[in-house]
Structures are given as C-alpha cells and as structure tokens.
Length: 562
Image (cartoon, rainbow, N blue to C red; front, side, top):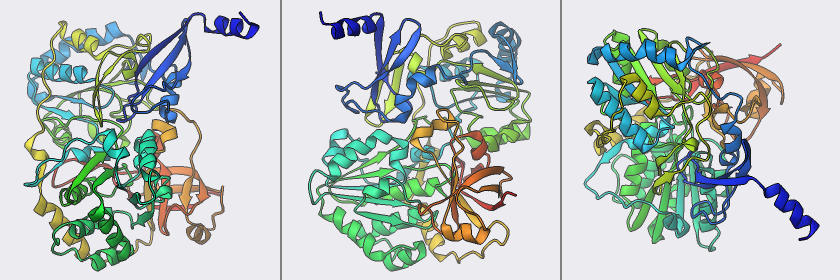
C-alpha cells in the first residue's frame, strides 16, 4: 500500500454515506450525506442519479449545514419561551380533544411526507373537524387551479420531454425555483442550431440571459402576453389583438409572432411556468392564462410547473379558515409542517383572536410567535414518499431526527394519547376549477383599464425575488441590496452602496443598501424576499374569485438614509 492510499484509507475509516432525495424543491435531485461518527462531514453528488447526474444547487449542497444549523429548533416554545414536550402534551392534549369540532381548524404546509399528510387527515377525522386547509400560501399554489376546458388533460411531463424539446418557453423565474432544471433546459437549447428558448418575465433573470428572445413586460402584464400568444398559436381569441396587447404590455408584437411561429413549427415543445410571491401580480391569472396557452397549442406540447413544494389544497380554502378565526368561530388552530406563520408576517395579526395556536417548525422563529411552536424533524431525517415534478419518490433518512425534535406521527399520537392510521388525501375540490370565460374576461378588462395616475407618495413598484442560494434566509446572513435603475437612483440622490429607508403601502419598513442594476425597469425596485423582515414589506390579500391568499407586489416610497 502506498503512502497516499494508506492516508486515504485512514481518512475514509468510519465514514458512512446515506443517500436520499433533496426536498428543497420539486426537481427530485439525489444527494449523499457523508457521516463520520456523530459528525456530518459533507455532501456528495452521486453521478448515477437519474435527474441531477452529479449536480446539486446551492440548497442541496448546503444540506449538511441545514441539518446542523445553529437556528435549528430543538425544544418546544411557549409564547417564545423554552418549554418541554411533557408540558406541551399535558397542557394541550386534553384541551385539544375537548375542543368543539366547529371551533377547531387544522392546517398543513411544506416539510410533510405523503404519509404524514394522510396522518393529518386522520387526525382531523378523529377530532371531527371539517376545517382543514393548506396553509402553504406561496404564489405557486395557484397552479393547483384547473382551467375548465373540454380539452383532454396533457400527459405528465418527463425529463425526456424537456431534453427532447425543440422549443421551450419559460414564463417566470424557473431556474430560481428549481435550479438544476437549468441543465436539461440548456442541454436541449444547445443540442441543435434550430432549437429555441424563449422567456417571459418582468425582471431580467439568469434564465433570460440564455434565451433567444426575452419578452420583458411591465409588472403584472405577463398573463396578457400569454393570452395574446394563445390567440396566435390556435384559433383567434376574440379581444386579444396582438398589436393592442403588445402596446399595453410594453413589448414588441413581432416578438410575440416569432414565439407563436416557433411553436407552430415545432413537433415537441415544453412550456415551463414559475411564479414568485411578491413579484407575480396575480398568480391565479398567471396560472390560468398559461394553461389556456398550452391547451391551444397543436401537437406534442407539455406544461411543467417549476415549484419549491407540492402541497395539496384542502377541502376548505385557507381564506375561509382565516375568516372563521376573525369572526371568532374558530378558536383553536393546529398547523403541521414548516413555514406557517413564519413565512407570512402579513397574516400574524389576523391570528390574534385565537385562544390557542399550535404550529411546528424546523428553525427557531426570529420573533415571538404566540402559543406553541414545536420542533419537528426535517424531510431529510424521515422515511416516506415525496412528490416531484416527475412523480413520487421514496425518502430515506440520512440521520436520525435531531435531538429534541419529533416526527409528526409522534406529535399526533401524543395529542390523542393514541396511535391512529392515516386517511387518503381528498381529491381536488371543485372550487379549483375555473371557467375559461372568467380568464378571458379578466384579460379583456385589463386591456380596457385606463392607465392609473402616478402615486405622488408611493412612487415605486416593489418586486421580490427568491434567489436559489439564499433559501428562506437560512443559508446566508448577508443583507441583500435593493436593486434600482440608475435613473431612479439619480432622482433620489442615491449612489451605489448607499443605505436607503423603504416603506410600503402594506406598512412594512426596512433599511437596506442600494444597488444600481439594469435588471429592473424605471419605477420598479427589486428586493430579496427570503427572510421574514423583507416578506413583511408585502401584503397578504385574498383573491375574490378563488379565495386563495396571495402575496402581490406593493407600492413603496424610499429615501436616502442620513
């Protein structure tokens, strides 16, 4: 044995590799966590993984950091103060079981396996409540809506479809949602000289940099562009003249015709949609307009949704649960998952009428959350199944759950003082179906809407982005700058690197460094919404048609800090 191989053998002694599927988005990448005794030594990228083939994005690469992150919650919190599991079960179990079913609501969000979600429905059935809803309020949840058309549902998209696509259209920032998706998309784009990649967004993104044609719209006008394309790729769509729509959206009509012609010639096409909370003005309209566009395309066309999580909608709308809380009808709320209410500062005040709030989390909340916050295991620490865009995959734990955390099954058993079986997740409720006419009517109304007068106080439109490298503000403590054009900065007397004070119509206030950028248009500013402080700048609104809670862009004012 050579000296080098002997050293390698010594370093490898005691090393174990645990393989699983990354659950930070729906791409379904595989990774291996390297363990050396009690220590997490790192992450490896398996070259034989069918989806990512030896690649990982910054989120997957930081899995080891996440498992041992200093923000990891390892004990129950009661009104922000440390407590214990015995105290929680003693105080809450009997109280929850005695709560009248109409006064109880159960919600869920991300970081649940399919089996845990079924257990949530089993718990709701045992406690007799019908107030069950998804608390996952990211804009991508609007892709659960289904356009009620006569057309047959398109077959599920596969990785082979993406790699073999002659033409790809990306609406939104897909590479930020599912970063490793960039590899098969760009492989398809560069496979032949006649392959085409088109992008639609209101912000210049990394995705747009690879496109043959980038359609940069005014914020909120992306769905109108899709409806114009729908009228070009299929039978004429009354009321959506290409020239008129282009003028309204601030784009070149010839670019729209080029995209439509490209999809008309191609045999295999893929349309990829992605929405971002705080950037997509109306995610419901965005989702349905995109579905209408694909339904009118001829030939072999597929729709792929780039998303961070797949959280099935419940039988109730979340807005109905909120209304029941505000009216005093629902007095107790139990949420299982990870994210609510941490990721939705705009909703916290609306929960103040609750007598009891119980939530679960993987990370310690930044502020004081009223009621109980319980530490739970991460998906990386669980057995179970998980939904990717390509289908269901099985998860294997890379570690035992962190000390002090509990699995959802253990929490449910402790609350009921009994172990129960899960129940099947209900089929998509009827309220998710939206008629085509409502989509086209909204588009025509938007076309006829007169230009609004500039707001002399809140002059700017604030948009958000969620960079892949700063997932939910956990992996980086760096304060990201507020992006603005050189022209807007000049009017404000702001130079690159200056600190500015920002205030929005939603009541949010924050001080940030400014950065001059060509990624946004005049009158528009862009902020990273990965942490609660920046998410608090944006409002939470209820869509009147569907009752879905959305987080749209917001008008803002700002000035240079003294």
